[in-house]
Image (tube, rainbow, N blue to C red; front, side):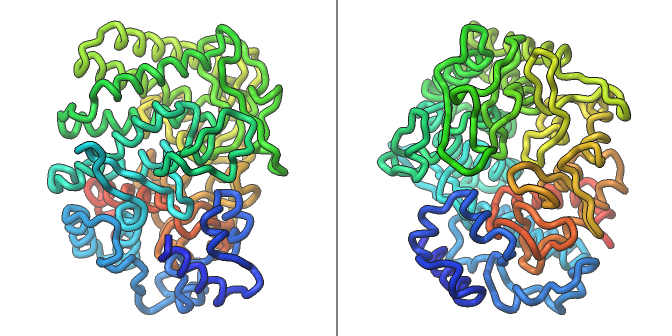
Length: 511
């Protein structure tokens, strides 16, 4: 954190002398909302280089805004983890892709998680990897899974990278066993969060205790992806099996067939999206087989607790967990329970989550209560409706998904924003007119044709505002107005998109 503190002190001097009073205290107490509120739309670049901050004056073509692409990636000596396989991929991409700006962006973004957010160690002779999100010193089960997932394809060339990912799986297992209702943790079991006054069962070592169904799905996705790539079952020991049993228990509790379950959450806050009504359990649901999620992957409270994208994700994750348990642990009883729940949730989704839209026909709702009420929208954070095929929730040729996809990317979605040069999805988390690059990345990863894919990449190329990195969000008319200059998930996901396109459709990068 010393380096981060130094950087923000520089930022304080360059941008505003009265903006930050005590940078050291600020950085250590930072959370997503504070970052948005305090740094928000100032649009500081990752390196906070004065020349960089002044460089990008054009929107239509960032490539013409500055004659050369400055070095913004961390120096080799300061990188948290070095992977020869990833460096080889970067060199190959830059050599073969003629678009220099895309080469520069790929070289900055794809390794960003490894460069800046991973902390590898060994505990009791086993790999142990702590992964922060970027500007916040905490490990989200969701973010950490998504941040390292694109590196799975490179493990065969880099055994140290493989051990790093084993460490993530081990760390996530320990966190789930610590508290499956928490979404973010510290590497220090004695550390207390600034959210310790939240009205829920807080423990030291927990950064935030917002129950999000996807936080239990993402570790399964990572574990399954690792297992399929390596056929290595060593991380999936008795503790891991216990974590899977814990996930199953929580999912059944949150079906709310026998009451609300043990979890509740309230926070004293001016932010309505942090509030959970009805004594902290959310609005009443009809127990039709779906699983409640008190919060969305954006860490914002749901309106109706049956969050549809997360339930689709759960269908895929429970099925994957069932396969792993059956083949690795030989526990057929547990495997059958997991598979049965997956089928139950899927059937309930088909029965209750499909609504008739006057323009788009049958679409998937964003949230429902099981009584017939539905919220039609989509959020930029993954899992969202747009990402369903990417996460294995539905087939890409699913007719209802196709209709849903058209709805999501239209003015009928209240959080779809279209500006002079850009269009995309935002959400409650940041607010009106702020597009998330992640939504454009996910649209590209689920693109229906070459034109759509290339259009998304072109827009993304123009959003970095001279910093060389992706951000949490940017204004629909001005990418220089953005939130979070250090957001590793978005960076690595963008790198995943470029690498996939490079290997499958390289001609789309030649413009």
